[in-house]
Length: 223
Picture 1 (tube, rainbow, N blue to C red):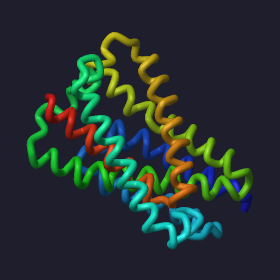
Picture 2 (picture 1 turned 90 degrees about the vertical axis):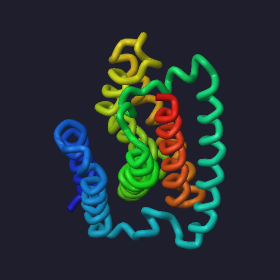
Picture 3 (picture 1 turned 180 degrees about the vertical axis):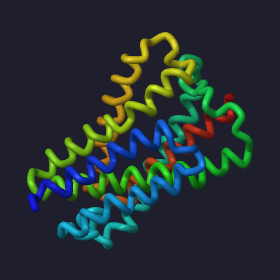
């Protein structure tokens, strides 16, 4: 088997799940479906000879990764909360998707759906498995660039829903919003890869979870 075969297998699984998950699966299945797909993308990597440390970083990095992720997440999260107080930035939090979400829904999103269904799954796939497989046939930088590009493309369908639901981007064409979303998330993905390579996978998982949860909570509060 080619060294690249497991990589493209994982890419194919993620691409199929991206379409099916965003367009057809019910909302209640989001977390369990992502956990299943997460296991499915880890499995071929381990079967191909990738070590768990290649995915997550050395175990000795765990404590530093937790501290780094919590610290960075707190700083960025505070910045998001402050930005919501600025009139022109506040429009970006006017998201129709949070309308009708009650207090229980808020807790579910910020404590379960986002940390586990989004942050854990996406970081394992895009900062753990894909770069680990990519490094077997190319340089670490190119592996991270590929993973970042795929992370950007992963957000095409979700960004389309943002274009339809977010008042802050209402004045822009859908294509421009999608292009900006893809480019922006690709850059974020590259930054998260740098964080993973420096502190281990726990750091971007926590950063991702905190930032997205704070953003959701702010949008919910302002709805």
